[in-house]
Length: 316
Image (cartoon, rainbow, N blue to C red; front, side, top):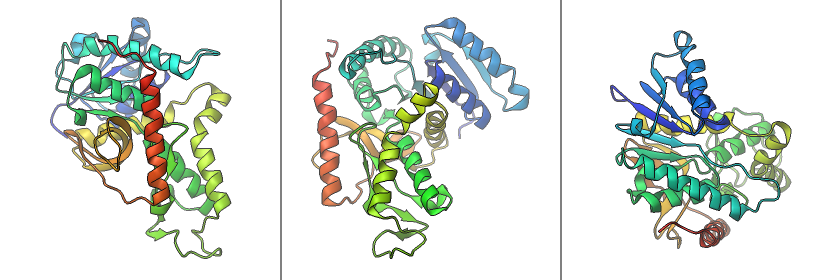
């Protein structure tokens, strides 16, 4: 990590404030700026976080304005509208596109060199919109993608085989949403693939188990929202992990939402694909081997996102 690092957070709702707390606990930056349309909320979060500085990591934390984006290394956007009762997904997308237009037009006045990290849903759509509205290099625009989905996936597998999720290597790719797909063909547990395993193997997963794990992964957010209203702990950790990879120039392979050009027949869309993340943002997109079925599912996922994009009015 360089001697001085600065993160600007735009949006101090449940996800944003939890991310800010995670940044403090991990000591990810020397400077953290919180910007929110509700200035009292941002200032309240800043006070609360600063009162814990003695017990955590030394850093400068303050509520700011868009001018404070100057010299930021990473600008994290969690701001956005929540879905209203009876509102269609397209209408929600349009409202968040309009919000992003306002945010981004303000940010780029002061900083065109930072890496933008997008968490607001629908994250793949808004990552794409950020690229189009800012005209910045696509490698510096990253969405949280399917990193959280992959963490859920590995946790659920760990519960089935009773092995530490850190020893399980597998991922979800595609849209962060209904058309995402699990890469069963690449799953390995401590180096052991699923191919040729017998039913009495510790690592064996039946077709039924696999389907249940995937459905639980895909529907996890709905379950959490039903029980407590929102998800924010795990996504905050996912955002912190991406920031850690950037600021530490770690060259970590993470399944994040990136802009694709001529990738397995997919063009001009942002979608979750394992990518090498370092100080310059997306350093490379991994050309992962997929089964024929997985490749078709990924293409369908990309086409679904493109269909959504066609329904959105982009500003001139």
